[in-house]
Image 1: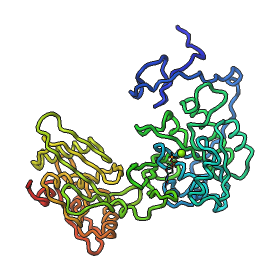
Image 2: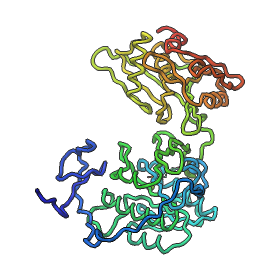
Image 3: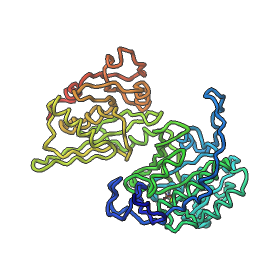
Image 4: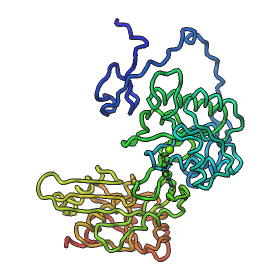
Amino acid sequence: MPTMAKDRARFVCQACGATAPRWAGKCEACGEWNTIVEEAPEPRPGPQAKAAPGRRLALVGLAAATEPAPRTLAGIAELDRVLGGGFVPGSAVLVGGDPGIGKSTLMLQAAAALARAGGRGIYISGEESVEQVRLRARRLGLADAPLELAAATGLGDIGATLHAERDLALVVIDSIQTIWVEALDSAPGTVAQVRASAAELIRLAKSGGFALVLVGHVTKEGAIAGPRVLEHMVDAVLYLEGDRGHQFRILRGVKNRFGATDEIGVFEMTDRGLAEVANPSALFLAERRGNIAGSAVFAGIEGTRPVLMEVQALLAPNPGGAPRRAVLGWDAGRLAMLLAVLDARCGLRLGANDVHLNIAGGLRVTEPAADLAVAAALVSAATDRPTHAGMVYFGEVGLSGEVRQVAQAEARLKEAAKLGFTTATLPRRVARGGRQLATPEGLRLAEIGHLSDLVSALGPPG
Ligand code: TYD
Ligand code: MG
């Protein structure tokens, strides 16, 4: 039997963390190109480590009374909500996002708010000098907050500090990609460095009982640069997203051991930092222009909140060649399905058209409930007739063209009424077992059972 090579350098994919025996241009595990990098081997445990006897575990029952995890509020309601009610002491949160999206700004605001409220917060920057962080704090009007700062990148120093300090509530490390462990040969930001420093910081957070925030940059594919492994090590993963052309930012929970995921926090970028947006629907619809074909308003649910947003469709004739399907903010496969259903069940043939679909404002929608709004935008674009300006849409569409019930219809209707909409197109009542909906006053319901009802309501192609 061939002996396993010991202590040989490893080749690690910086995108997914998979290891390969030799260098290759393409990672076999995730298919990314030019992501494999040679890393020094991880130190092996000595022979005595293997021999160390385990301690016998104390086994306990399920029914033991456990207190709900206590929380440390960040003092920014949108952030606290995405966290599931504030930071959990001893837990680690990864805050990811594109460079320049506002991660440092948001975390400085959160740490300062927490410090102002009496919690002890430390902000360690590996990217900016203390003076730069101070300047930013002054610009954001936070200079008076009793937040403690340091600029450092060596894990040895950071670890010694965090180990010695007492009564910490929150520690922000900005960013994890700049932190390095002296004992490892690899460069900062590589999988080995990020994994080793994150593991040590998480251990310190658990023993010190403070909440740890690791800020991480994201590659354009959406993975935390280098280590997707990091997502598995932390308790919660939040992404700050947004369209650079727009002034709002969305904080999205994609993993949370202590709360619900898919919760979003909405912020507006101002010269004083990120401001909370209490009414996201109004913001997302602010730039909507009435009476334009190819636009429909979707009454969606993001996390626990109803949010209205505009779906826009544009068709352009493309008689020859393969028609383009360009989608922003929605699933391309779902669009293909809807186009096929519109074709097969409603006779709306868009095969010779390029289709551009966009959720206005840069939101990303994953709910199937958006089907009906997308279909309405497509039909409206095809017929060149605007949808009713006071109409919202929601409902899932099945392969036979049937319109299916979706969750939280009442919350959607309430939000629509709140924003002054007068009509809602939604799945028929039979689809929810005949239950009567509590309809807000002034809102008329247009219940439909099949996609063809929508097509005939919007009129034949003009
Ligand atoms: P920054 O927080 O540094 O982004 P990240 O840490 O994600 O790389 O923000 C990028 C720039 O945008 C920075 O120069 C400050 C500016 N900015 C504002 O002026 N207002 C804001 O509300 C935000 C979020 C950023
Ligand atoms: Mg930053």
